[in-house]
Length: 212
Image (cartoon, rainbow, N blue to C red; front, side, top):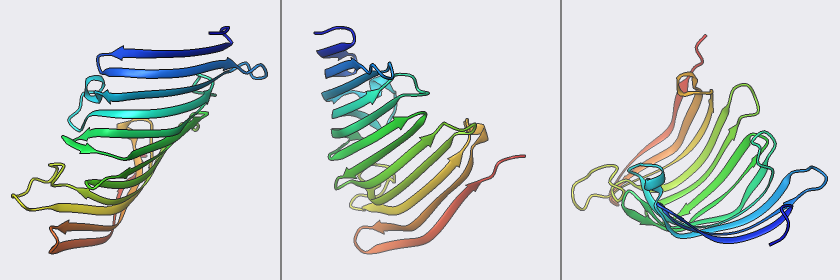
């Protein structure tokens, strides 16, 4: 209801990947001329692999609340105020408790992801800065544990359980894959095999240099 400058909508979007319930409000900022929007989006099950074919994430349920102003990437400001993913199928395993927040402002994007599950435990901050001539990609991840055996990443014999934990700091520059340069640093890496054996690596760095 309302005028085009003050619009509220409630709908159920039916897609091949799943249904999305949307509650949205759109209004116009008389000072800036930009549109301001608030929206909640939820789905009990959304088939990610139908939208983005992959072998890692097949489906997820989600509840998201988004606030923003403007739709032009150059000037827009938008924020995922709160986000929860549940019943997320990663490598055919059901992962719970994935929290997501994030923001985009004038071609700079940042996101925070927390996964608190018995198979995966991660706290991740990621950012992309597209304001300069060369894009910058940053990531800081505290990987408390990833069960490689449960996710069938590291194939093992029956009853062998392999878990990895590490801290990752990445700072990468470039506008395409052929021009990327920067470094990725792994710290305090530990690989645990069952409860009896473990291997530790204090520091490891991967560096790609810019070609002249």
